Each structure stands twice: as C-alpha cells, then as structure tokens.
Length: 324
Image (cartoon, rainbow, N blue to C red; front, side, top):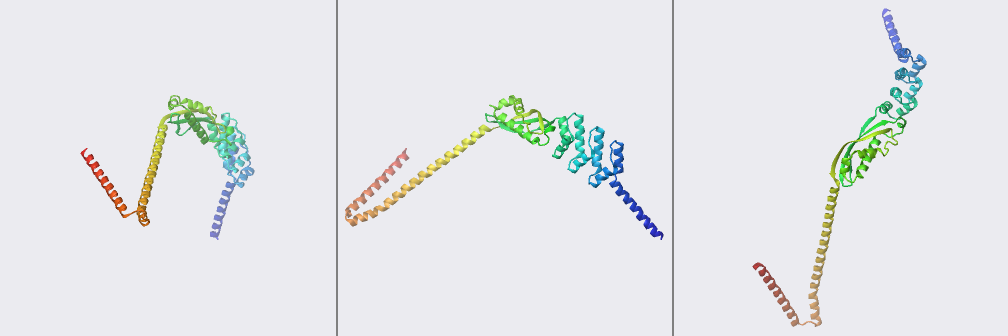
C-alpha cells in the first residue's frame, strides 16, 4: 500500500510539474511582468496567450514593443504581430524607426514595413541615409580616340533615398551606370593624355548625367581613385589588319598560280591529243593517195634534221654557259 502511495505521489508531482511547464509556456508571466514594469500595457491572456495560440512567439513582439515604447515610437502590438505574420523582421523595423526618429528622417511604420517586406534591410537603409556609403567600382577599361586603352577606378559616395527604397534599383545599377559613363567619357577624349591630365573631367561628366534616377540612392560624389594606361589597341588592330590583308594577298596569289598551272596542263593535254592525231591523219593520207612513200621519208628526214639541230644548239648553249 505504501508503495502504491509513493508511486501515486510521484505521478501527481510529475503531472503538476508538467502542467506548470505548459502553463508557463502558454502564459509567459515573466515577459508580461517585464512589459508591465516597462510601461507597456498588455493583457496576459488576451495578448500574450493569444500570440501563442496564433503561433507568434511573444518575445519577438514584446521586446521590440518595449524598445519602441522607451524610445517614444508609437506602435501597437497588433501592428508588430501582423508584420511578423507577413514574414517581416520586427526588430529591424523598430530599430529603423528609432534611428530615423533620432536623425529627423521622416519614416512611418507603414513605409518601414513595406521596405522590409520588399527584401531590403530597412535598418541598414536608414544608417546609409544618415551615414553615406562608398561604393567602389571595378577597374573599367575604355579606349580613347588615339587608340590607347585607359583603365579607371572610381569611388561613388551614395546616400540611401528612403522614398525610393521600394521599387528603386540597387548598387549593381549604380556601378553599371557609372561604368557606362566612364567608358563614354574616355571614348570621346581625343587622346589618352587628356584623360591622364584631367581625370576630374570624368567625375564631372558622369555626375552631370543624373545616374541616380530611378535608384534607391542619391549620388553625392564620384571620385576617380586611379587611372592607368593599358595597351595600344589601335596599333594592335592595325597590325592584325595588316596580317589579315597579307593572308588574303597570299591566298589570291596561290589561286592565280593554281589557275596558271591548270591552264598549262590543259594546253599540254591539247598538244598531246593533237600529236596523237598525226599518225591517223598520215594513214588516212596514204589510203587516199594524197601522200606517197617518198613524201613520208622526206618528212622523217626533216624531223630528224630538226631534232639534230635542236640537240646541237642545246649542247652549244650549255658549253657557252660553262665557259662563262
């Protein structure tokens, strides 16, 4: 009997402990007391227990609410809860509102939550609005009119524009526009020496184009940090063109040579065909009685005499060359 009482007491104790844990989880008394002593009016059951039932961690709402209350920012628990359920970052929104208020930047809760839900870091945006940010572009290469390549590195000082954070372009657009402006400015210079002597002309020209239009930033300044001379692209292009022209000329010469060889071979073939027809013509002349046997012997003698003269003339010519 005593053993049963001992087991029953242990079960009761475990049940009480478990019930206390469940109650403390669903009824965050400590968090409620912290809010009450911080001057934030919250209902223990309607607000905090309701957050648990709506699957919202009370600490994610109450702590930012206390921070906002201490900073004098008027926000209500349902607003923070709705923003959390929408997938927003409640703590960053409250921090952004406090920073904007201290810096006298007009920022409403609705705009801050819209910026946060748009995927931007609203707290960082407020910081950049107060503290301008420097964006460094990669080394940008362009070619002046004299064919010399010039590389420029720029540093762009920007300030976040709160009004254009929703829907405005980001840093990549700023870098791309500045790079385009540098390329066009260097490309319109008569010589690379002009760029090297006055690099500030690039800054003035690019800054005057209003590159921050439609972006989430306001460009304060564009400074050319470094300018270097690159390759002589003009000379390289001329060399490549000369080599290409040489290859074309060689190809055309080879084409003409091949055509001449083909024509010579065709003439030799025609001559061989004509010589092959001579015996047939002589046989036909014999049958027709137009050529006699003596005429044939005379013709052979003439051919032999001609061949002998040609041989003698060739030997004499070679002997004269040897003597010389």
